[in-house]
Length: 429
Image (cartoon, rainbow, N blue to C red; front, side):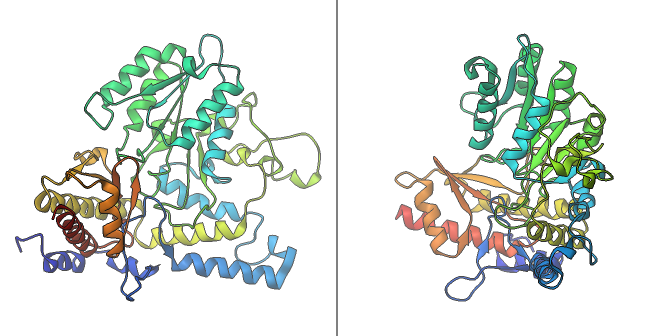
């Protein structure tokens, strides 16, 4: 069938999808008319896996039946519960199980990582970030620089796209590392840029940073569950991610963290310490001499909220049912490729796609701007939302659309473009 802009074509693609059954593992929100929403907002908050609800209810039941004994009883006792997530996290980010841990929230983890890996000196005090970093990352970096008595105007290197461009070029990132590397203590960049959806070449950035003596870390908020990674093999020093976007673990859910194993036995590495990072064998001796575990767990402070971890376990088990991140990436490429084709065919002059076309540099998200005189992106966004689409808007003028491979379909992409085309036509009338 040659006409890709037809519902029949989209439905045929869905029928041929080897993981189409995974959509049934999620609860899809309904419109007021009872029909399912066209939910394309997994880059902001993923939908609820049915296993997440089941596992949370299991722990509520354990709490009701066992009280404090639930820490040591049942198939999933609470004391080691975070360990039940290690294999799933390791598979997602390309790590060893001892290099990952579920703890805190994303920005808190970035701060804790900078305690260990941002150690400014008079000669080496800069942090390289992007000019359009997610605001929380910018705030965290700026506050860490100030905490150490440095001046952000001198110690923050802000990477900007070239004039007239929306995304950063690899050569410009590497040139900035070459130029500032000798005075840089830390490089902190995203795995996937939140605004444009650009995937960063983490391997090359890490290699270049280490060659100049810098520590290198990544914010994987929009990368975890979206693209395959190999953090261990790339020798990334640390990374942190939230679990409520492509990992579908619920609003504000506990975050994940990676620390490369080469740092685990470094007794001189500074850190903010807490009870949960202490050696497990002697933790309950209640002695006031901190002995860090030789794993990413050493950066834990307190016992984590079990109900949130249960939701994450449900999400990770759903990823496993789908065949893992590589199978999800295959479908994601197909979905996003199809969505881009529809947009280019049906709205060639009305929509600009900021996200790079080269699939090496793009994930599930496409960031769109509207080129319609007299109508801005927010006006169009409001119109498509009223017509059953859930995506999101980022100022000043970007509509972010993310077909998540676990629960989105080719038909979702078809209907989105149909509704978007209608909204633009009505705005232009």
